[in-house]
Length: 229
Image 1: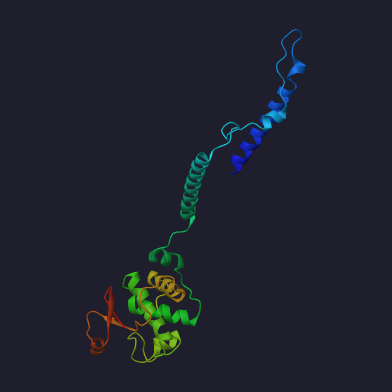
Image 2: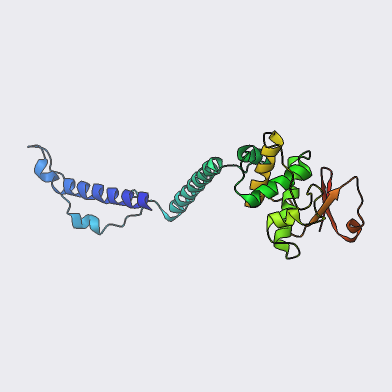
């Protein structure tokens, strides 16, 4: 539309300039030459002109121009979207998250209890298996069927075999396994990479067959652990 208006304005200006030139032509005739017939601008005003006569686009041409403009705009929009998509950070893998969150110190007692559960229950498991164990602990705190704090869930009698008389043994905090357990605890608490549904509250190793497992719905197996809801 902007280009069409500009073209129309230019055409009108050119027409007015030409009309003025014609109107003043008899005054500029060389002496002795035959004076051209003069014409008044009103004569032109009454003439029948088509849009092509004054350089304007016809209806069909306008449709074609508008269609081409829309196509170019669509291509430009697609290009900008592609650039924006390239600039967005890609989802990080669980391994990358663990590497970036690994550390020795935990954020507090609750996170420390969760890291210990991961360390003693699953430090020999793949990262996904470690995260699944942490999620079971957190699921229990939210279930209403178990205590509502991490440390109470972990130290609850007859639940986790590594706990002795309500006490958590000392982990080797200089080891890479501990650093990884801390990372998994942080990721689990943040909910950054969920693996299990909220109703998965139990698991056991695949080399044992507890009677309670037969009463539950098996959800999945990760590493050596089978998870139930």
